[in-house]
Image (cartoon, rainbow, N blue to C red):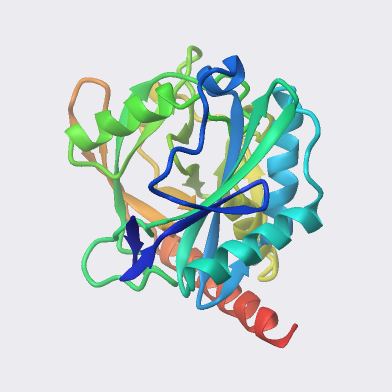
Length: 292
């Protein structure tokens, strides 16, 4: 058994059946299971509200199609299973992981609660303040970058590297020396003429990234796509931002380069303003769920 925010978590839901978390759920005599062929999403569940569920389910299906998983469950089925999971665990606030695992018959649908990652200080996990995170550079690039797959070796090693340097995450540097994304977050940088992010077809575009863009557009601010080379960034450091389900929008305070040198990044007032806009967007979305 595990806990999330003081809640005791007892159950997972597998193909619509409630199962104790402390019982084995996966059988390795199926080669697809043994090879970990699957996709996943991490959902934001706060105060009995699921955020951006349709967007997450759409990306789950999209990821599955990219890596060849068939027999996908309908959105209505996923919603029913989530409500069962929430009810059986009496969840109030948690993250929820949803997985589609390929098998010899099609796929299995797994879901279970996971702890909300702790933030610095006394941060409110519902609406984190933009206090900043640290990043370390790491060489690597994803296979099937647009699929949120269970091929986690690169992400795991990049995150371990970040922690070795006391950082929250690593930024991945690809074979072209481009800075593309974090191991668990999307990357942005600020230029004089606006906010930039790598092209959507070259990264795992998060649901938070999609809604961050919408929150800015409500204020007449566009997000541009561009490429940022590692060498160019070192020659002229820019303000960086990261987004994810757990951290919302955070500026990058410190950057560790590939040689272990530390860069203190420039401060730009737009980062806090953009974070505030996204916080307002989340609160407004939460109120709309209450009224639905």
